[in-house]
Length: 246
Ligand code: 6PG
Image 1 (cartoon, rainbow, N blue to C red):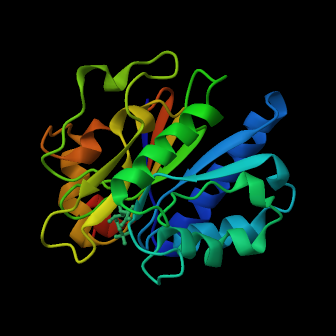
Image 2: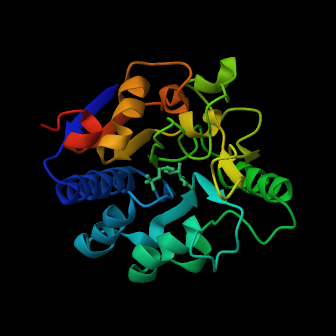
C-alpha cells in the first residue's frame, strides 16, 4: 500500500510527518513492549525530528529504540554525521535511554568493519522479531538514491520477501558515486529496509520532482523505486517535489 500526501509548505509537510510517526509509535506500543524507529540522514528530516521531539509528550520514548538507515563514514562529532544531526534535532530533547540508541559505529576501523558490526547488531536485536524496523524514515536524492543505496544498486530477488526476518546482509559498506564528497558510507540493504513494517519518504523541492516521479512509477534504475515495506509506504511531499508548483 502506498499513500501520497502533498503539503503547501515544507513546515506543513514536516508537521504532518511528525504526527504520522508519533501516531504509529503510539499505536504499536499499545500492543508491543518496544518500538524500532530507523532515522534518515540528510537535511530534509531535520524539521520533522524537531517537531517529533517537541510536540508529543505522551510518547513513551523509554520504549523506543533508535537506529539509522545509513551513515556517512565520518566521526559522530562531524557536522556531516547523520547521528550528530539526529542528536541535535531529536535525541538531545527526548528521554530516550542511552541503551536504546543504536548508531552505526563509524569509530570502527573501516566502513566494512562498521557494516559487519551493525549487521551483527541488528541480527541480535531483531532475533525474536519477524520484521526489522517498525517504521523507517527515508529521504531521496535528486538521482533517486535513498539511504546510501545509489543508482546501479539493484535488490536481490528475495529482498521484498513479505514474511519473517530476512536472511542475508542487512547492512553493507558502499562507496557513493564520485559526485559525492563523502564517498564511504554504511547502509541498510534493500532487504533490511523492505522488512520494515512502514516506510515514510520525505521529499521537498523541485530538484527532487523527477526522482520522486520515477520512484513512484517503479523505474528500476531508481533505488527508491525498490523500497517496498511490509505494510505501508507514505510519501510526504511539497508542491516542488510533487511536480505541482505553478
Ligand atoms: C544521507 C541520507 C540520504 C539522504 C538524501 C536526501 O546520508 O545523505 O541518508 O539518503 O536522505 O541524500 O538528502 P537531503 O534530505 O539533504 O536532500
